[in-house]
Length: 541
Ligand SMILES: [Zn+2]
Image 1: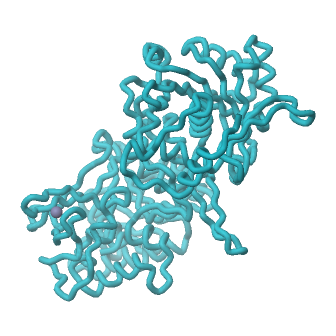
Image 2: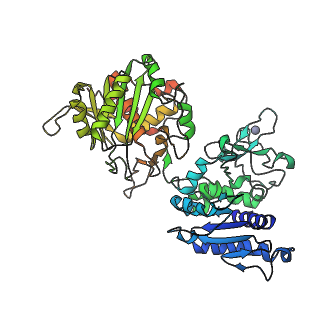
């Protein structure tokens, strides 16, 4: 069963069940909608044994319009470079296929076609995920995010298998064997590795939809359908062999094709440093990100720093190779007596050009949270702003200026005394290592945050900035691996930068670095191991 077949069948069914029902189908390109209309919708009408009942001489049947005897119709259009073509059309339902290629800003224009629909106004999207920054990924994150969860029926196990990449999907792909059939599927339990049946209970299996964002269940439902839960794949040894081969990269199938097409998951060549799950687990402090709530807890900390990543408003500042708007992000970081760093409070200022206002804002936050120092990024935007902080009455000795640098041989952080070229004492920080280090601290709960603050794409909060950090392990021509941390163009990373600088400087000034191995038996990346080795040897001050 393919996505297009399913959409076409549903379309013809809706049209003939509801009189005067108008469905508008949109794909990015004309060729896509032509293929859908001709190859998928037309056969349902023309080869239907009851076709005479709903289609005939009085109805229209061409590529861009198909009407029925009950006055319902299916309209087909496309919108790649603009959405002008659909203006003036009136519909009860919009169905947008291949949404991954569609510009998200066209959607409101397209959905205007529903404004006259009194009883319906249904919107349906379908597509295959590609990279992490595209339309389908945004819509998916806003939806109820339903996964076809399969509970393991074997005694003593009972594991809830979630076929999503961040959970069990890969482990659920069992080995190929000749006995694969409807009753012995290729899908296995991620925990006990025994075969499990994805069918729903009524058909003898243990599968069912579970909505991750249950509150969106009735307003914006979304379903993730990876190939491995479809009977045509898991009950046929040959199809299963193909699926496993794709996973193993046979026939030069790139890994992103496997993730996109087979798993139905977005994937970039780079990968995220932390997952949503990591962030949610680290956001375990009991208060929300509100000044009045957060300031009640300041006495639990030995030191408190306020850390600022200045916004440049469209300047990339070498932070990332992809330039986008950037705002000033502020993090209040506190060192606990047991050597952790808590992010007590955070704020994003949307006015990066109003320097005086921002300087006052930062001084206000310092006073509220009794912070001893300001940590800020000294490169680019930071110099002018530092002058303003000093003019507003801050002692320069309480300002820790940090300049991000490329891969440094000497260590993570180095103290640079003022000289004739650099009239200011400052610290250099190895950017890639510091960010990597910070993300590992988040995963091992050395860094904890105020309550999770993401409320959907309209109100993304601060913590999701960490999800916009992606690793890029491109191999350069010289054969030497080239490791960088980039910002995903889908969103800002300023808060992640502020947290990183603040945390690193707290450890640096305190003179004690956490021993990650003491926190949990997790796999620490080589990058961090080498950063930590570097730390033990050198003494920057
Ligand atoms: Zn099991």
